[in-house]
Image 1 (cartoon, rainbow, N blue to C red):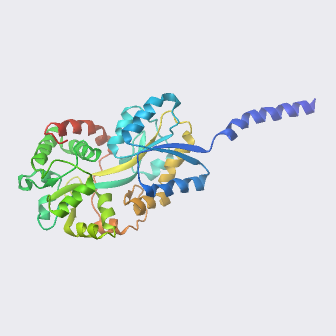
Image 2 (image 1 turned 90 degrees about the vertical axis):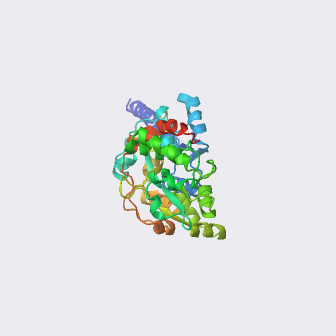
Length: 339
């Protein structure tokens, strides 16, 4: 009888522990970050944890639609993307679940996280100007780009691009919708040409004298600064960089970030991955590998381009206060036909 009881207890114990042991050591990431340098981050996470990463790369809108269409059966654990406006789109679509982690709350500043997604790196949107054609004092703020003295001097990418929509959302949060529309109309009136290309194209256009000023994200600038190509060195010698709005609310800062999908089959692994992204090693890699700033305070950065750009006052407005305004910014930019 004792032997039968022992066998019964062993069977019960197996039933209790078997599901835990059977949990797959995998994590499914849908990523819109298309940087080759990120490969080391994924490899290091797997090396340190034994959790294998399955990754699907794609455009932001495609990945959001895919998760929607997959519904409750979606294998996605995490959606990774660039720009708060894109994270906001996914959040408004109901794709994310509430995110709770003492590590994330301790490591990531409150203004760079929401209840459902977090930032793990940042980049600033700055003004680039042609040093031979434009007085630096003319472009000390975003507002200056709409001044009449810059008529036919502004190059910029499409107003529907998330980088510009996020800047517009921040302007709305600080100055209101009416003032932001006045600014957008003045900016469009100053265009040197119709919007086209990416941020690197705008920098090159300023260097070539096609226009006098442009908006660009800092990691594009840092990439050119670190380039060994003669044409890139020549371009950077011709342009200067301004940190806008240092005497007011500070330079607009955008993010790369991620949220855990509502139906994530491996939620524990997903939380662990996001916590890993805030480790010193991962944070240094964002800076050294992709020319972004860490979100964790005190992480040492040894990137010569970021060092050369120097310190600046960043806009400290909570991302929760401006990210939801990107749709409003889109409507405002459409009116003067910034498209």
